[in-house]
View (cartoon, rainbow, N blue to C red):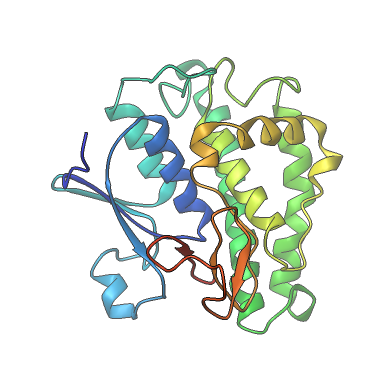
Length: 251
């Protein structure tokens, strides 16, 4: 099946929120137009797409959505076919019997992800965690959120929703792997949380995650070799061109 113009996703390569949506789209085996931004556009350009000035933004025909958890909920609700995968992608964003618990888990994960990406953006703007009280407080959320989320996992073989791959699992993995692959002065200490660590290790091997990797980034990285090796300062000997390599934006 070729790419349909009815579905499209605007995203930056580095965004963990956008990575989660790309994974969901792959899990559903949906073709879509990839509108990938290499550099940060002007405010006016971004505002023409979303009033929040953020990515990802998703189009499905005439419908346009922003905010990643809303997009994920929409995809689960509107696309019912689940390709054969074990465990299968969840049928919905939360269970009717545990709606508020499942929503709380997702909200906690997204709050943690926002803290991590805010610290990242400020780092590249020249402001480290230790330089600012707000960023210090944002970083201090991580161990408390990690400890609580570890307690919400039933065991080291399951995700947050039993018997399936949930968007809670996907967003958690995307945010934590992002933190690991950015030298921003934040260590989520994944190894101290064995149930979370096992979950992330399983997801790393899932085809949809492997097809949408998160690789190391720091100032000076302009792209990647096919195996994820960073390219510094542009093309070098043996480096694929922009047609075959992956360019990245600083997130």
